[in-house]
Structure formats: C-alpha cells, structure tokens
Image (tube, rainbow, N blue to C red):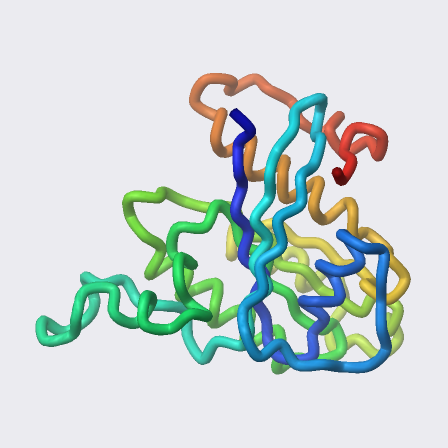
Length: 213
C-alpha cells in the first residue's frame, strides 16, 4: 500500500504559495496574481529513494488564526468547532508537515509566519505528535529588495524556532524541487527516527532520486 503524506502550505496573501505548488507540479508560473479564496488540494505521486509516496498538498487560503485546540476552548464552545466548521481549516491540526511561506521583501509576511508557527505548536492535535515545519522565503529573484539578511532569518528560524529554513524563487523555479525533497526527508526522518537512529538522509537530496509521477 502506498503511503500518503499530507502537507499544508500556509502564508499571508501574495507570498506565492500557489506559485510554488504549481511550479513544482506543472513547471508553470504566471505573473498575474489571483488570490486563493478557497482551499485547493493537489494529489501528486512521487518516487523518492526508490519508494513511491502519494502526497496530499493543501494550498490553504489566508487564515486569521490557526484552528485552536479544543481543550483551550470554553466549555460552551462545541468540540473542534472552529476547525470543522471552516473548510479552510479542516484537518490542519493533523497534517504530516507544514510549509510556511513568506515574501523576503515583506516583513509583515514574516511576522504572519511567526504567528502561525507559534499557533501550530500550541494547537497541534496531541494525538498526531510533532510535525516538521519548513519556513520558506519566496521571491529570491528580488534579493536586492529583501528586508533582512538571509543569515539572520535562517539563524532565528533554525536555532530559536527549531524549524527548517529555505529560500526559493517560484518565478525562476529555483530550489522548488529541493524544497519538496527537504520536506519529504523531514517527514520520513521523523517517522522512522525511533527505529533508524543512525539513518543518514542527505543522499536523498540528489536530483535523480526524487521524481514526480
């Protein structure tokens, strides 16, 4: 049976969430901005290190807040009501991994990622355990307009937030495939860490070991 890995892609408006997904799946990019008004789900299959995986990639519209853990709601608030009454939020607390996208030219979009990451850690479904989070700075092609040096943000995310960090350009398809390879590495490493503590997954990043079906 092929294993299915679910991934939620979140971020502020106009950071390029959909552009990253479409570049990965279809090698397609459009300059015209079209806001994501409803959640879209893509279901590609990938071959990674000789194994096939089905992916469920959720392109999530702008959320004012990550769905709250039911234990933190008031007694009169229906159990998991926030998550299940809003189609945009449905199932987000049980996802295998999260990609949090910001625009390297927009400090506001980074602050949004900071908020959502904190809320994910506070409200993640306890039965699902921890899930890898990769923070992605998009629009690297606008490097000269960035609001903060890459090194400073990378250190903050990796050292303080304990999350993965990457930068990419959806426009020029730069580091897009690498992003999803890192994502798969993180998910699979976390899933088999207890049984294979000595496993080394760096070799999985070679381009010819990951392909889209």
